[in-house]
Length: 597
Ligand code: GDP
Image (cartoon, rainbow, N blue to C red; front, side):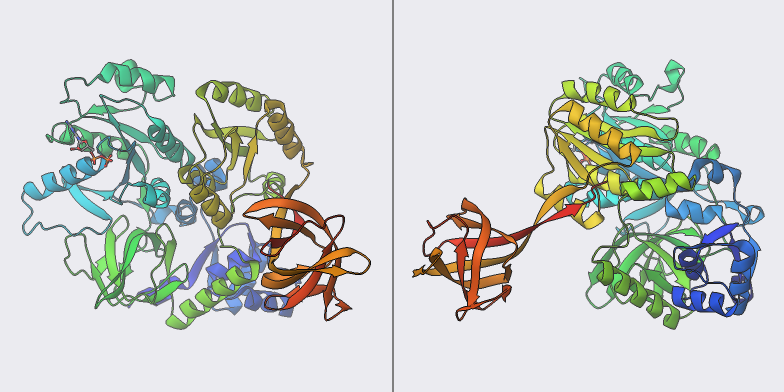
């Protein structure tokens, strides 16, 4: 293949961290640090080095470094663009070519997203392409006026919120489906927030206009109120009336998509670095992991070695959305591929590397990083990171998502927050609405590095779990001035860390006996973790706490000990508490400070 020669050239920015450079060079950060050292430069993994230094390292590792031609637009929009867009921006400008637009369809449940996706796909099949049995692979392509358009077609129900959020991130254009008989609803607003966070233009598909109670004018009014002024009201949001069910207006919608695409500079370098996004992935019997990849730059070919998160492998076979075997895929093409060793997560970026050895090394390093920090690679923004970015001139705003118990509180809260803006840091409220904090909010926060503020509402358990996994900060308040006070402090970098209880062990009380000096003691068996002499404890009876305080004595075989581990028996006495009984549960915990911002 003629590729090998080209791949040796890498384009680098004026300064780059050691970590990023190692990614470019497909080397480990240690290798890069060692190479720097042999050249007399001492650097740590997060340190920025200049282009010339990076070029020397690159040369030693067998690459030729060229300064990247960052597109003005990308520069102006800053680093908050989705990663793949930043990567495309690093391609040399003269190599960029137009590629088909990638469209994500978002909207409130039951407003007709699935019906619309089906209608567009079937209209294309009906339009006469032979053998048009389409496979569901999470994305498909249709042609309109001889121009291809790619649609992301991932299931829209609640369990797939992550994909939906990332769908907007992977798309060039969002089609927002709104039922004309129902109007703007909570998920409509969420979808708008997703699209805005990803800086993606929105086209409104005003669906179900066949319904007798459809009221397009009312919806347009609602749209105008939330900043999407319809084109026929002299605004710049295209609003296309359709009936997904009857198939009317579809041509107009496709037309609108191409029109917006023409103004959106949708480009990629077909001969550049090969990367894209995982749309969905499953384990298929007899085929192993099968993943749908959306190629966003470069040309993906059979035989390429791909890394996506913790999955890697050589592509053995590749199919398009019509299940045709294909050899290569250009930018904006969705393909389903076989050959990965694991199922990657939807939304993950993938890229092609030189060899299986390299791929394994990258995955190994990621595994180590994940297990060392105990958290996934992608992390929400902490306030410290925000300040670091402000100082580096990379971030100028604190992004917030505001949820309140009633609509009436939303407005005063957002106004109060807006007033806290300083010259240095703006406050960008990505989404504000009434209702509890949901997985959608967490996804939006995670994909756009925002912090969630709850007023008289808390996250549901699914949202809480997701927030922990994604490292998203959620802060709940019930008094407005507390909230504004905190944000103000946060903006000044003075926020007190919040204290959080961490349970370190549990024990069951098996017997109660009289101990000489301290009164009664509990004979216990530790059932989880450990009991520590100097940690705090509470005693639970029937799930209710009946005492919370300190341990007076902790003994094993009459000996005072500092801790007792899971599986062992011990005697525990409590400071100022004797009313425990057989069957009670002891919970041992510490209070840790956590920086929530
Ligand atoms: P989703 O939850 O947004 O994917 O919505 P669906 O596509 O599942 O549609 C929800 C319901 O609305 C289904 O019963 C559809 O048949 C119906 N529906 C969708 N589009 C139209 C339309 O244009 N007109 C009418 N009358 N019903 C529609």
